[in-house]
Image (cartoon, rainbow, N blue to C red; front, side, top):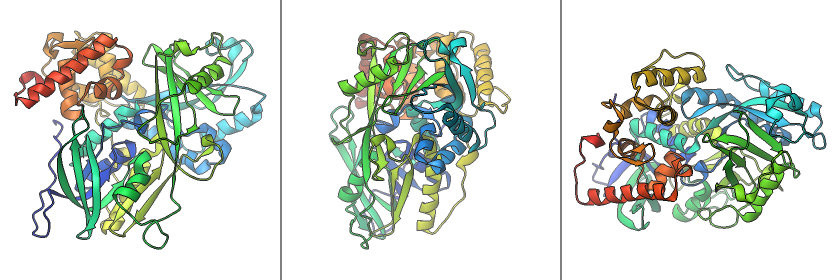
Length: 550
C-alpha cells in the first residue's frame, strides 16, 4: 500500500465557527513526545493536527546520546520505577523499528576508587532482572587485559563488565512517528508556529503561522478550532502554557504553580573512530558523571554527555569550549591514545526539559515525566519532562488521558505495532530476533538489486527499512535514481524525503533525516543546498515534477 498523503483537516461546517479547520486534538511540538502522542491519537481515530515551529526533531530530540536504555546510573539515585519502566520498553521498541534501532553491548571498566565491584555487580543484576528480556544478552564480567575490548584502554584498566542496551537514530525515530501519524490520518504541519490561543466554544481557537524556512517570516496564517490542546513543546512547554495559552497559574484557579521545568544542557562531540570493535564504552567521570563512547556512522566515535544548567533561551544552545575540554580529559583518563579538542570533527548540544525536582546537581534531576491535565479554561494537557526510551509509553498514557477528558476512551494499539519501515515481511519471513531479520532483509535486497553497492544498500536499509522497496519501485539500475547530487545521494531519495518526511532544506536531509553532512565536504553539502534552492524556485513557478519525483 502506498503511504497516504497527510489529509486536510475537516473544514468547519457548523454556523458557530469561522475557523479554517476543526479537529479533536491540536498537538503543539514536533519532538519525540509530540509526534508520539499525535501518532497514538490518530491511530485511535481522533482528528489530530500537529504543529511544529521548525523542522521535526530540530532541537532536543535530535541532540540525545541516541540510546534506548533503562538508565543504569539512575539506579544510584533510587529511581527504580523509572528504570523498570524504561527497561520494559527497551525490547518492544527494538522490535518496532529494527532498521533505526538495534542492540548494543556496553563495556564498563571498573574503577575501584569510585564504586566497589560488588555494587556494580548488584546494579547490573538489577538491570538484567527488573524487566523481562527475550533476546538481549545479560551482563558478564570481562578481563580487559586479556580481551580485545581492553585494547583501546590504558594498561591499568584490567577488570570490567559488559551489559546490553540499545542504540537509536533519534531524529529518524521522530520522522517515522510523524509519518505514521500522517498515515493514520493526522495533519502534520512543520514550520508552523502557534502564535495565539484562547478558549472558545468549549474548546480552543488557535492561530497558526506558516513560516518560510529560509527567512522564518510568516507566509500565511490559519485558525484551528480544537476540542483539546496537547502542549508537548519540550523546553518551550512552560512558555507555551503561561504566555500563549495564558492559563492561570494560581492554585485553585485551574493551573498548577508547582509544575516547573529545569533546563539542562547536554553536549556531545564526534571524533574519528578510536576503537575498531562494535561495543560501546560507559566511563565514570571523576565527578561521578557517566560518559559514553559509542561507535558512530562507521568512521567515528560519539562521546557525551555533559549536564549543565541552561539559563539562556532554549533555542540558543551550543557546546562550550569548557565542555569539549571536559569530555576529552575524562575520556583520556581511560584511553591509551588521548582524545584532544583538535580531534573533534563535529559537536552538538541540546536542552533537556526536565522536571524540576529540587535536586542539587543537574545530573541528578529526574528523567521521569508527568502529564498535567486540566479542564479550565478549556481542556488541555501538558507534558513535563520525559526521556527518549519512554516516549511510546508516555504517548499511550497521554492518549488515555485525552480520551478521559473528551469522554470517549479508546483502545491501545502501539504496543505491538511497527513504525514505517519496521515491517520486513515483504522480503523475508520474520523471526523472533530483529537483528537476524534485518540481516536477512539486507541479504535478499542485495540479491534483488545486484547493482546496489554495499554502502548504499546498508545506508538505505538502515534509514528506510522495509520502505526502501517503495523508494526502489521501478528502479532497475543506478541511472534510474536520477542525478547524483552528492556522493550516494540521488534525486529519487531527495524527492522521497520531501514528499513523505517533510524535508524542506538541506539541513533537514544532511543532519536530521541522515548524518550525511558528517561525511561530506563543504562543497558537497553546498550542492545539496543548491538543489533545494532550485526546487523551491521550480515550485514557485508551478512546475510539475517529472516521473522521477514519483
